[in-house]
Length: 426
Picture (cartoon, helix red, strand yellow):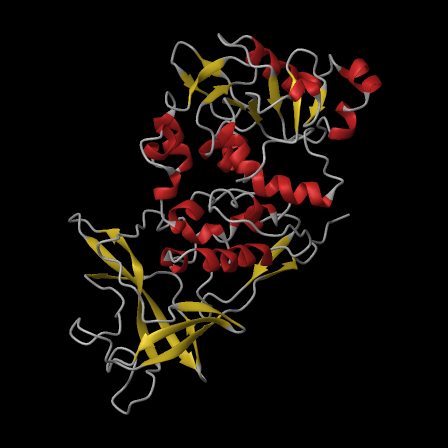
């Protein structure tokens, strides 16, 4: 269990206190702020500088923190403490950054209340609805487009939304229909009718589709708590970080919906920044997706315990070239008439999607062999089959009688390349 936040802001003095200070005795209740970062935010170095705090208390820069503190103080049961990501973490310390990013989801979850500040939205009290983004009336608030705000939407137990003037718009429950429409997250996960942990891995990653972060690596790091994993924090590996996230997930989860993704029609939007474009081959790829955008289409996938079939002993594991499965040597499924591995197989996964008749269709992938390694091709879709499921390697459901063999599915690495510079006319 992650430790509580190391530092909290006093909602009455705006001073930052650390664990060990007499004022922070025990585990006090605290409010937490969710917002979109601007170019200039209050940092840890700023707020710990007494002179800076005195001279900048009434500035626009401090307004978000002041307003959030006021909301906390004015509650029926006042809250004395506030946590804000911009200034409660010393980002010059790599060790502290690692601990914070891996614990942040739990910090949002343990907060008494989360205040979501949508700075580009106006609330209409007559129509009882929030506007589109003031800066771009054709789009929703940019708060819904950011990677980090996904965990800030899902994690808190109680959440209140405010517009650009800090007018109260409603609780997460009040706005659940609107939030479901904008984010694609089924309202049951927003109201608490279902725990986010009941959602399949594909569903949770699919919630990130279409979102972006300033640092490419944060696409992965902002999902750590949502996927209930922890991993070292490195900046500089770019899109490979999301691949590392999936490999880490394979070590702790048997949820095969991780492999059930498709090529997004509008491309890998989360990497559209800094004049770079992804390099990958959707007609010859592996089991791990190049981007969360690939999970948008099938984020309604489920893992059904009553249909789940344990794989033969050995299951699946990471290997140097990709992912290795232990599969039964079943003729016409993995073995041809000559007793050799089939050159092309339809590979069933332990995950399902509801069809038009309300019945579960099994999800299968098209694999093709090259040398002794299989590759996924036709990544634009999966194969849905009624009643399909993995073979457990048993003969007539009695005892293990069918021999097994290893089957390796290769895995390339995604990379980003610079786009050619456009010539400008003089």
